[in-house]
Image 1 (cartoon, rainbow, N blue to C red):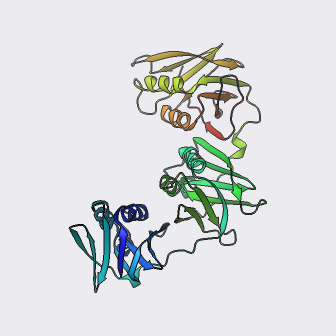
Image 2: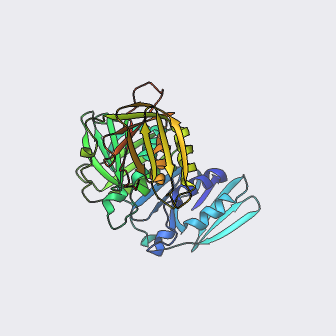
Image 3: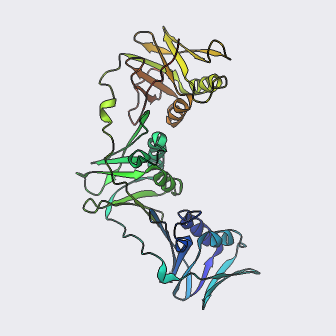
Length: 374
């Protein structure tokens, strides 16, 4: 293999591809990145059995060929190269990288031991990258860290015509994002369950100036594919039944309050200063005010009152402050509407653009209140 390539483009492609390589791979061969020089492009790929990454960049190919080298080492080398052309050459059991006055020699790994990458499924539909990234960020808020319950570590993706609904739950809260997209089949109706950490990793690595194409085969529902700016990833799906969570949303909420979102977040952070980790913060709604309080009678305490726009009876609810801040931070609108039924049933949070406008249903955050002592 003999390749001439732009060093900056090479560094970017290697960095993106090697992000899927685990720090301590279960199989040493999975520490490698596969390079193939063919038809005017250098094709790069990596795989960890759960997620695969494939990229290609233009290159001058003097001699086609393949090479498998340590991925993280190649990433460290390529990001340090001078801003000049780089030359990759394989000879026997080594690959040489030369750029400017710098030369590196890497040992080749046994290419025939590297596993075959999964076949990318058929195209399901597409959406602009910023919309997809925001939905993953919002839906991922309630992903569980309980590895012994794999289905709770996932984000359920429901494809229903031109709507995609992404949902996660850790049993204490539920996070749901909905967006409009362009499906290949306008009558599509299918559901997948993707590991939340993998989905977030894919979203973080997207070029937000390009659309995201999602690939899925309902007849072989084991993989979800992502295509963006010439980069292709696949993610293994979780095999399991996601909890039935739709019933957790109340048909009617008799008590509703609209608050300034940033003011509420700031107040919660101040209250949390005096509490032990994850001790409840109380919110007492009365008239057109809410009083936040934290701490017990024989401990440090804090109180703060915020103006609100409220309909319904007085109510006091208490929440885990971390869960409260995480949900509020995922809302993009300047105001938040809290919708309540009783002090112990889940409270729904929605964003809204104006203090007197309707709430947006594009993001719905449901949080179970904590029990507290008066």
